[in-house]
Image: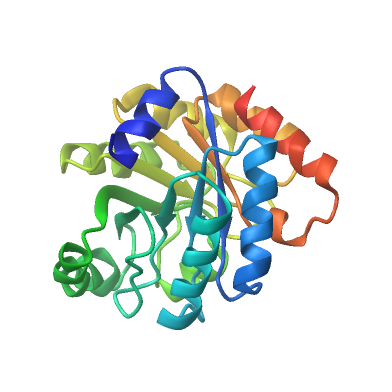
Length: 244
């Protein structure tokens, strides 16, 4: 079974939780320990990546350690074609569709396509949409973040991604965002999509995770919160609220 098929099959039974680990934020051994604990807590997949300072060395080391520590699928969440790890199971082959820089829309993807093929990584196409505030990823990607109250704008971008053939749509408020994607935006986008909807950025409480789930998110991503939180029970509560 492919990673994509695994995710879609699980989504039929409810909202999933993805853990995002940045190779630059902890050692490979620490990332493996987090992944092991989060698998036990109920997360469904491990995403590996970050907006800055991801290198081939720290990416490969982190991916290898995580693969040795847990049985969950590992998905590379790319910061560019300069580092793509064949130690992951799959790659979110994504386009930041509201970037002002053509490089983030299609340029990096062109550079990385043959590498992905050579490494025999499973590509999972995804439309990546930056929502206000966008934070570091919006800055690095030169995005024009969609305003929090611009439901039509988010719906239009999301549906365009589906019509272009992308397998998933991701609404991203930015790592460490003060506020997550509004539930009303999630609901509006979900109502017009027929492909799975992923939501991330600023989700650090059970209440925020529950709101995203009830609004229709098929998968909820937490990253910065997990890296910073030392309370295992708090992390479990967020995962439980995300999955319902």
